[in-house]
Image 1 (cartoon, rainbow, N blue to C red):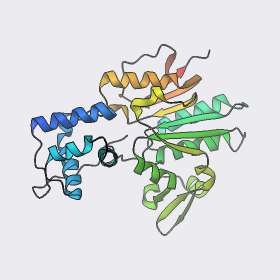
Image 2: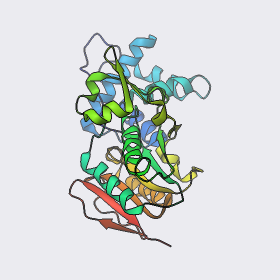
Image 3: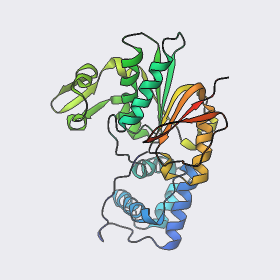
Image 4: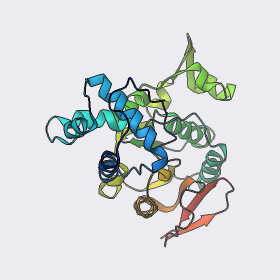
Length: 286
């Protein structure tokens, strides 16, 4: 989850300013269901996106829309639509070069081996991050020394997962991608670039609420990549999520978080490794 797309509110949009009661009601619902913390600084962002959605469906006030969303029968689909709006991510391929360099170095240090390498992109948005991980894994494991590997990618938003599975991106979003990578893993035509079937087949996209990680049947991962996600949660919840992520890390595995997202967390079985731009940990081997 990265920075949300913001829009300006205008008097023509239904709803108007959120009063204190309405703001508290909506922020409590969002934090309870998905853990998102809507601070006072993001009040306008919430107000704008609620109002725009209310205009689309013809709902004139915040309370009526709230009642619709929390309705146990008719509100499920509308809730999914709203969550997608409020968790829109701005992402790109190889967004954090230093983080991907850490993954590359880690994979280099662990090969060769007979056991498959499993990587997990948490909060994968429209797929740029897990596909970037897949390219790094293929370069390090699938070419010079063939090792089996796969990438699991999870997100709460079904619409962004659908886009990720399609693997088709505007060519302008790949302007910073190295030409050799573009040639190897994409087919570009008419202003669009399509991820190769070979790479798509190695990435599995699943829908998951990050608050439910502790209930997930997923196994152990060699690499867990979770950047630009924890900043939207309260500090205690960040620690809780990270503790659950650590449980899904294989012995000797790498956990990579964004810089500044969780500076005071200390996993009992994890050792922090040196990195200027990322929080990175190695889990002790059994």
